[in-house]
Amino acid sequence: MPDWKALLDNEFDLFEPINMAQNLVRIPSISGEGGEVELARFIANYFIDRQIKVEWQEVEEGRANLIAEVEGVLGEGPNLLFNGHLDTVPIGSGWTYPPLGGEIVENRLYGRGACDMKGALASMIYATYMISLFAPSLYGKLKLVLVVDEEGSNLGVKHWIKSYKDRGEVVDFGLVGEPTGLNISLGHRGVAAYQLKVKGKSCHMGIAEQGINAIYLASRVIQSIEDQNQELKKFADPDLGNPTLHVGMIQGGTFPNVVPDNCTFEVDVRTVPNFPLEKMEETLRNVLDSTKQEEEPRLHYQVSQSIPYLPPVKISRDLEGVKILSRSISDVPGEIPTFAPFPASCEASFLVEAGIPTLIFGPGRIEEAHTANEFISVTQIVAASRIYSLLALRFLGGE
Image (cartoon, rainbow, N blue to C red; front, top):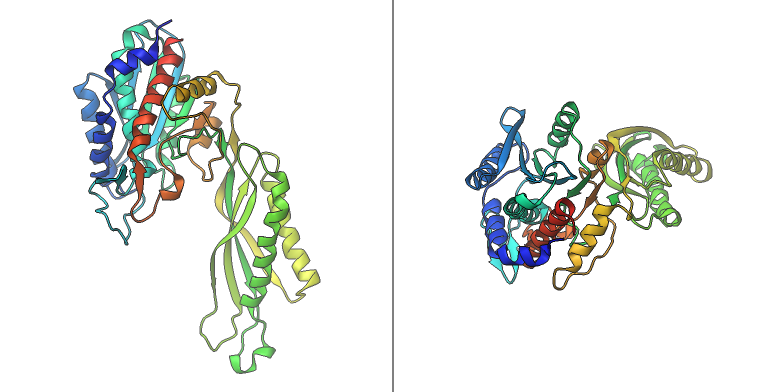
């Protein structure tokens, strides 16, 4: 079998993924604002210049997925998927470094999307080029699927999955490059949200005792919801983390001197396989019913689901792709294969649902995503590109 590490070391230029990441950050690609297509064109030209096959997949007017493919010359074999998203959240305010400058200061590349996830895109793009150099010694295919609208409604990945199924394609293993700090995440928790409306009775605040303050009622429910998280820890999944309930939005009242007769709040719900959505809904109902029975018989409420449920996903550590990734991490100086939960949700859930075993692994820390002065470690960009390259070479070429 080839010594892929030695062969890769002879070709790998550590400055290339860094320069690519800087260039990607300098192209604004806020979700739904038109920049995604410009970013896709830039990446497409990079691949075309290197004779790598690209497909332009229009999702809707002005928005397109980009797919790059390297096919092994040795014929049919396993197929590997790298997935990332082209879009970012809005730039926002509070920046010290130029949000589109791509500046590097003390090993940190700053800019909107640097962490989520243009650093990983750069690592994957350069790794795809590396794989193309070794195509004569490989079987199967590497697909790099870069999609739009991940920060929105996931239109891009849904569109690609439909075409993938329509064509009868098969992918044996997938990797989403969301920022995990180069830890291996075997999946993520499920996510949903519920809107709770609490009803009260308004009157003048000067005679507040004659009204029913909906905000006070809601606060008792909210505290009871928060208290549930301690109990939910006993259902923790070792690879995904704890199921949780957290209040993220609240609105109520009309004027300071009027007892509020309504209060609406949103509950973020995170589930794990052994504590699914049905049990979370039951927990919410129990909190509301017990609060009404034990503390506040005047409590009246309505509950409705406010975002569709994205179920939890988790793949096995025993899959060959996971083992190859672990070995590839070990071959990069300073890196040790470590498994850790991914606290957010991502497009791995759609890929797993489509029958593609998919894990999450990428450079950068999720704590830096979507923040002012968002940054990513330059060292991790380079390390990720080496790891992606070794994973693909070993998956498609054996070792």
